[in-house]
Length: 294
Figure (cartoon, rainbow, N blue to C red):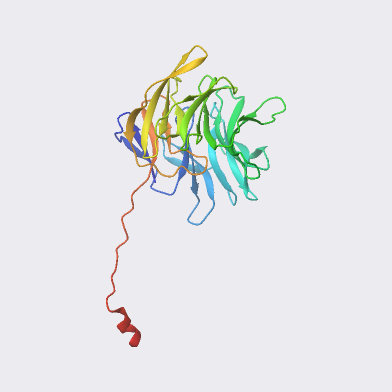
């Protein structure tokens, strides 16, 4: 795949980096750096890399042999929380975004945990937790970074939930759930309680907030990037009609990852575009059994 900048109309003003196997892009809060997941080389475990977008310089952030996935920036851009897979399950680790030092364990549990967002006030981390022993499977959890730092459930049902992101003011959480039979984007208050609103129509995933909180973006199953206005109204919200921004061939986002990000100014989108490889030539060998007799 190839990282590509698109404007609001889907036009391509430029590309970023090379065409390689990569996923789970995460743009820093200031829009100057990009964290993503890629293998060191063919057959190697995935690690997290950081690219300076102005200079195009790529730096390896984590070092195998364990899988490192789902990078999420802290609101000040100083740290990155990610999922490190050891002994068959993912734990939450955090590391200085400069690359100095080693990763520090933030949360270890019996489940597979992957971070999805860090609140703008720096107090909470949202993460998806896969309970492989229980009935609820994929749940949305909250890790407070103060007090006893004990995680608590935000949404824990018999359905599958994930991709949770805080609104810029921290009052709302957008997430996906398959409670309707297919994955849709929903919006609910934070902390939990007080109702929910469906945002997408006809399927949706990977919700991302506009920087000022006035809209949500998401991706449809057929690769359309949609925008929906969000307006607080009393104790609830008014959800607008989804509007298509553009159609794109997005690469697989990987476990807990994302295939697009919005620039801080809201005027450009960075996507992980799937590159169409040319088909291998087909060679037809006729009368091949004749060769066996020689």
